Image (cartoon, rainbow, N blue to C red; front, side, top):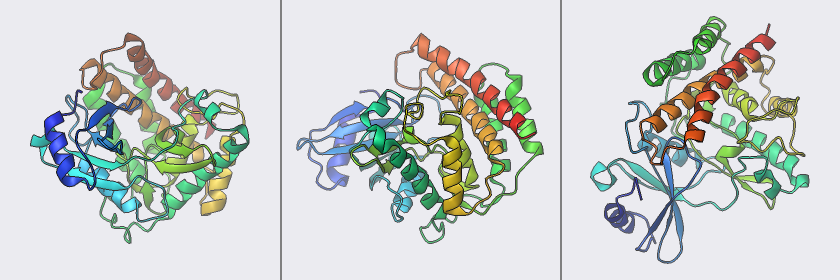
Length: 340
């Protein structure tokens, strides 16, 4: 199993994870395009989840396992559903990179319209509402009380994100795309006033949550590697990149094009009602999130080209990532036009 030193990780799990019984089986969980995620099953059929960075070249500021472990440990102190952190290994001699282990949470990741068929139509609105409510609860968490007050700068979120992802674009781009620069310039020239400071998940959507499909509720929020402190409306805008639009168009890795889910307008209204925040400029945040996701997509495309993702190169997948960057940049421009 690429990315797993079987003997080293087995010894570490046996010593550091209470109740874990060797031998262990490691299965790569499909779907992750950045950090690698493995399902670990032990001799007693107990299940755990292990996260580690990609196996090839990675950008210096990305894939910090210690930071991600710290975040889910802190968020676990709130009412936000998150897998329980079980252990962190920073000794790179064990597996070639740091990794952490968390509990396995049963449920379904709703990452397509076809996947939505696992959730009864009458529960889809309830699941939508709970997704919004969990986000509102996350943004309501007191970062000082849970120990994340020093995770990042509190102010100037959009400005520093524009600088960060512009640098990432420069480091990982495989071609010139003028639309990326055009969107960054327009976003930078119209910076919004940040409405307080919250935990900003950075990749919040159905596809990064485990849903309890029996009750239409979010069982756990996953993939915290982009989490920081900042403007809460960025997470709400990011939902708008994935959520099906009024014309029925949406991203293929989101379930909301299936019947029964709330509309994005209803999502925004519910969030505003729960938090009291002004959402009148939400299209700015949709544009920002589309642009940032375009940069991230290009980075994944570059890592696939360099063989860093531990998979055989799939030409069809490569083409989807290449064109995905371009499509997201166009989506960002469209959202900015709606603000005019």
